[in-house]
Amino acid sequence: MKHAVHMLSLLLFAAAAQAQDNPPMEGFDQEGSDPLAIEIADQVMEAMGGRTNWDNTRYLTWTFFEDDQVWDKWTGRFRWQRDSLVVLMNITSQQGAAFANGEAVPEQEVEALLQSAYGDWANSGYWLLMPYKLKDSGVTLGYGGEGTTEDGRAAHILTLTFDNVGLTPDNRYEVYVDKESSLVTQWSYYRNASDPEPGFTRPWENWQWHGNIMLSDGRGMRQDQPFRLPNVGVYDELPDSVFEDGARIELSDLGH
Image (cartoon, rainbow, N blue to C red; front, side):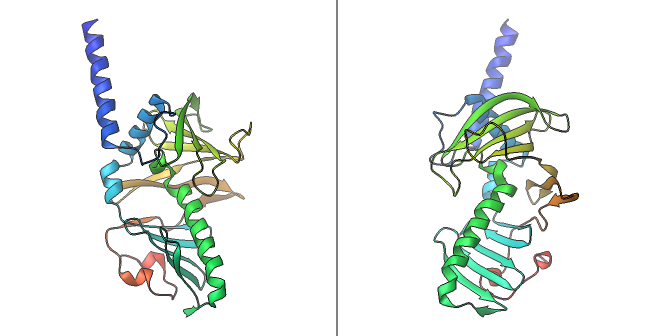
């Protein structure tokens, strides 16, 4: 009996220490969230490299469909490009400029392009970084019980709902956390939180180390082809020109 009590005390201590290492963002619904779901979310963060390494990660790159994106997580600077169209902006202020073939686009067109680029950052960034945002502002975490992913792996199911945050606050997600690795291995998306069936269910595959954190770029298949987020990268340093030059660049050339 004493041994069981001792083990329980150690587990509670470990969970408390983990939570302290991964504090919630301001506005996270701590009171309305399930304690077990919070504990699992902290395990996910630890498995991906830990909160300190995530906070110390500065530059991230990825491509979503044909849209290249470079984000300075520390300052909010953001580069979005598709073909010869380039938007340079700050995510926090949502101010910036747009260029086509290296030339400034007409002023009356800039605002729409800024809004579009910001929306792309919010949407595609979630496709890449959702596991790092389980305790974000406005999020309520629920525990949906134990389940099995489509490839047959045992998982804990977290439910994410949102309180008037983001561009689509009525969404709901079910996030499958692998019991062995503590990594997210599948998610289901519900357009409306009350929907009985998900709009889609997709795997999170190909977890790899990038710098000191792990990222997943595989989302199953789409039209009989692998659905991936190309150009996923983490950088400690990038030249200011990445966020200032209106001419197209190649993400594959960054860091060389």
